[in-house]
Image 1 (cartoon, helix red, strand yellow):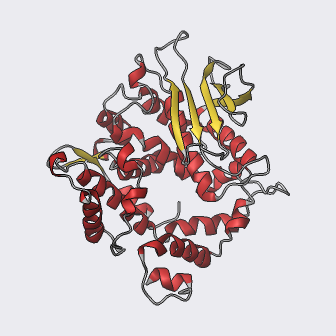
Image 2 (cartoon, helix red, strand yellow; image 1 turned 60 degrees about the horizontal axis):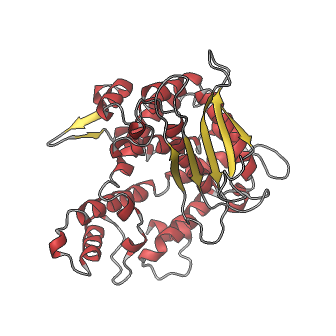
Image 3 (cartoon, helix red, strand yellow; image 1 turned 90 degrees about the vertical axis):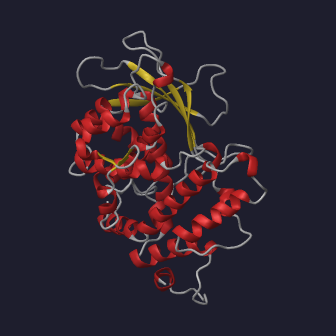
Length: 378
């Protein structure tokens, strides 16, 4: 009912079908918050976003991003760009090479169609002779130097850059414990934390400039953008939980008893029990849920990461997201360890003993901060 009311019903008969959800939520957010998606995108030229992210990681982590030329035969496509990551001007080691990030951001035929972070070479060893990591961020944004990003695409880029920082700033003896080669409970935490930067006014001051005038994004537009995040936040979280539960139940099936409809049956049953959207027979939404295969029973790491990221943001970044100390705490407390330190020890050291709730078997992150974020703009 809220979707229909905020979207102005749009000629609909009062029933929200599964395929209406994304459309109605987008329209309701735009109407309630007076947001024009094209006007917002005009403040996110791709080149500005890339340079803004460079300024962000310089301020927060003390590292520099410099675009450099490829070596002969190094790139896999002419549009791929290479960023060298070096130590900044804080303390010893200024200018020391840390790693490499490749950006493959433009769409093209037969390219991987989603956004992802791929490790090309792991960090290995410590000290001056360590193996330096190299990663690729693959996205499908607009083509050409005049391309602009939607705010959602900016958030996606920051999400993937969080993975990149996890890999590049890792400092472990063994390569199979470096960066994102950590427990699945932790692998999505840096990326979800980086999503918060997309909503913060101070960070938007670095990322957003009008593509023609160069003016910063108006404060009123930022306020409306942040307000839009509050609408249907619980609905979005419910969908993530539904995905995670489906993933867990599908991978608990006995392979010996699988039939052609087993996965669809699980997906329909979970949706009926845990979603406000009714099951649409024959639509098989799970076929578009690629993480069902790639994550193989570990998609729960997404809602887990939302909880931990909310705690980290609240403790280290909310008051001043560009403070150097906040980034150093994250770098030293979490990113540098990769998978070489037990996740529970990392979280307790950074967030205190209350960071994890132990019930029955195992432990789960405290959701209090994440749930509080549903009731206020970021």
